[in-house]
Image (tube, rainbow, N blue to C red; front, side, top):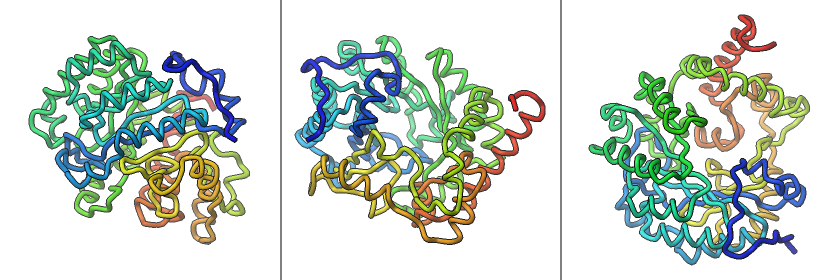
Length: 387
């Protein structure tokens, strides 16, 4: 029987601390209970961003028909809570496209979950702002693609989206809810990234992050994949961008020492999964597919919740996936034994999206890792990072 976490019904466990700092975190990890889960409400989006790996048109009827219903979502949430989950992230596509978003949001809150929301802010209305003010989310993360109309709309490929983004973001900030701002580092907005960072930090004070990793399409669309590749920064471009951020460089240096121990950086260790996927959390796609993380789409790593149970997925399916091994000599000798593994974009999920194989070694990942290593060595040598 799953060990249940006691709580007062309909009253969320509220904390300003990060989830990993909650008192129950370590205890729950010992119990191997799910702590967090991500819920993809839809794959549809109001924008059509050049770099996006998932978005389908807002009016895609076939995609809409496959979406989990309100009742299915509440069932999954209830099972998650009974198993110990504390936190749920609502993502997409654009989650606010769901006509029943308010019902879903309140339903999750009533189950005692801390709820976060990822949004592009374009669809935020006064009603949404009032909802979030009255029933605060743990946080809302908003993507900032540019701080000028030209750059923003070059990325979103949607005329008028910059104005709706600014309007929605202002409504959120004025409501007083916790907003976190982030950016994707693209060729289309690289020239504006310093201004984007300044824009974000002026509005959130203590938080801003950018991500240079552009996943290829989940549906394998060739034309869209070429567009994504065209938006990727080179390894040197990524390293130079990160090198300008001292905090990021210090964190990267620590990761080199902490993420994966020496026992895993050996060809003798042929387990595919050394990340945290499936340890403490899981991901549910808009059509009910259970995954260890958002990017892991290999058919052997996906469990259909419409045909099975969450408990079975958590207790039996995850261990099977995490036990997967590679027998590919080229991978074991190149990637598994690589001293730059903690600077690399590689993981089984990303490798599969790039090549169709989880134990492949994409050249682009090597390029990024080598460039990052060069920047770290340079910073250590000139004394701007401690040895």
